[in-house]
Amino acid sequence: MSRSVRTFMLMGNKWKLRYVNTLGKDVWGDCDFETRTVRISRQYPKKGILEVIIHECMHGGSNDMLSEPFIDECAGDIAKLLTRMGYNNVEE
Ligand SMILES: [Zn+2]
Image (cartoon, rainbow, N blue to C red; front, side):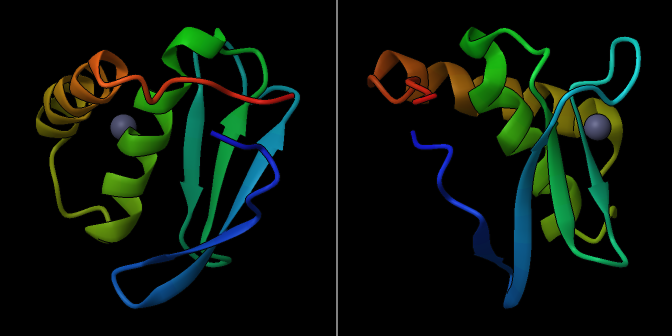
């Protein structure tokens, strides 16, 4: 996984991906729907960044139509699968 990715397509829309120093206590990612930006906190342990990205993309891609518990469980399961398959490296 590379941090050089700055934009990506999500459900037919172009989104931005940004890493920020902090989003607040216990907040690891968020979606700005106006600017279509997924923001990821640099504070989050690298081990879990895959889950945060999947989680926020599910919020963004669904236009926030999915429930938090659903996204939490589904993003966690997808991240675990991808991690088992070896997709969990973040380049600095
Ligand atoms: Zn969420």
